[in-house]
Length: 431
Image (cartoon, rainbow, N blue to C red):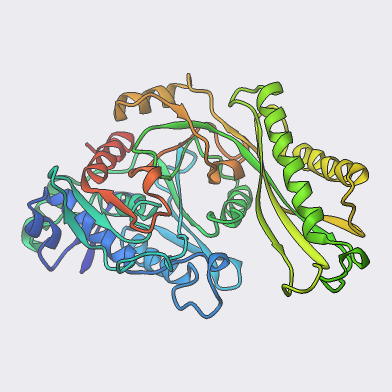
């Protein structure tokens, strides 16, 4: 493929000219513009970017670097200035900017590059196979198809011309138009674990003195604008006991029993929160999620660890939620019959709740464009990592259903890609 750029005082539009015919459009009878999105999405799926924190160091599919380089190729061909910034060694964010109107309005899209692991997937995770259901729906399968490379494909492909080169050139000349705003598209790392890339992107915008007027954080929302979700406080409680032979448990201090009793106590605390605490996004929640302990079946466990996920509402800070967890743990161990030798609370992650005013003019416009009213959701996104000093309005929005995210068989319907295409055309006024 090759790219052709037109200039009118600044970069106005760059359109990919596909030397090969649009394979998806031909094979499945899709509209040409949707077919190009499918082809780009299959290319992105074929570029593995498994979050390294969710797999082994030996996994050849781990890391977001390949994805960042792939995106740099696409965005550079679209006339963007591209910057790769290592958030951690070998894990770069990519920032693609079109500074078309100096001093003008800024639009932004944040799409995370990382996916969850693929070990539990029964089919090929990176081939982007398409199936036709009995209902007639077409589904594109593969890791990242739904969460959340689909938005990248729509952003990249929605102005591509999927015709033969001669026809494409004629259409480009006829449709030459300028962006009436500045644009930044960020490909961020680490969203599936601790939202590393969001923090780095926020810092980069601050250094560039950019405040985004309208920001979309891409997640599979079925193209519904999401205006609120809870934040998190995640900690690990490390329990120290004393080992002994399992035939003489009275000589030891069983760290597993102490951690298990703590888990039950925290479960009861969650029930209390649900009954007694209210907020604009509902009550906070608290869940023990992971426990590790023991080295042998005949050894009283000397150590145990318990991971806790605490969801944070807008009426509290994540730091306050963490402090309350520390106090809960300390009070439990002070009064329980299953006292460990010692314990330590390690903070894993803290992020604030996200809440956007649904009556904001842009949000109301989004509802009109998508035909869907804004809602709040239970899961978290990179929007938690962005303070109000970074943007003037923000929503979470993207094609695909959250119910398909992280699944063994991850897929997105072609219809959702088409719906997202129409949204971006309306938002960017390129209809």
